[in-house]
Image 1 (cartoon, one colour):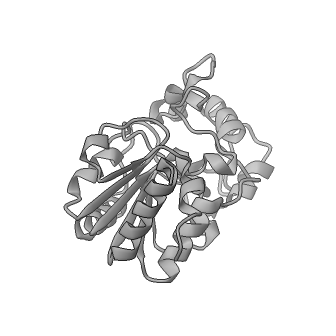
Image 2 (cartoon, one colour):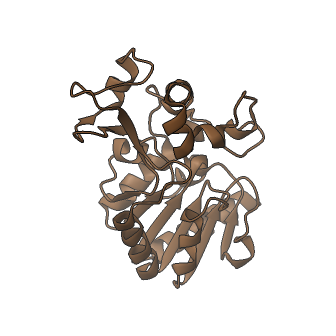
Image 3 (tube, helix red, strand yellow):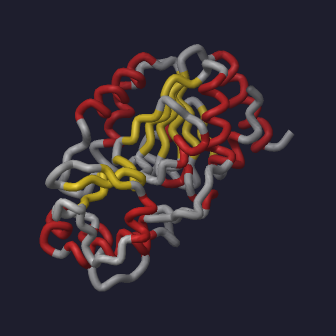
Length: 244
């Protein structure tokens, strides 16, 4: 048996023994759906733009340069053809059988919900929700793609803003509380597809006091030494092998 098979067997045993499992995922969960991540060698933040993506995706830039923000948002953040991969599908299956209590995601692509997961805490919001800053009317992603305005406006005249957390903006308190409560109650926490460098989201891991911490990520993270199992393989490729 090679190392990969052995690691999958270990993960299978952990899943089988778990009564309260929580999943915490980042951009690496969706790369197998064709959505680029941010910090890897080929990631969004290592591509060259006139203005750094971290600046474009800030609250300050959105207010000062909404045209530039929306140009980047439509070109790089909206992926209408993306579909759930094996990771999203397996997590939805684990929820249906009562194994998985909550998916906590840093992603804004909505793929967990599309795959059928019902218990999802979207720490950074979702591109599928966009709201008028004036009357709070909601608009979906298709509206944003079809709208030809440089800066989309509501029929009431208000500017529409994606329901995503930009740099310099706080996380939603109720979503954070839900995530912290689930992590604190979990006996197993699977952390996948994240470098654990984006705070405050990455800081939520410290609330875990359970028995098994599993890390599935292509690169090293600051939590590797504290994990019971570290798997350096694609998330979907790994989770698809788990039997439910």
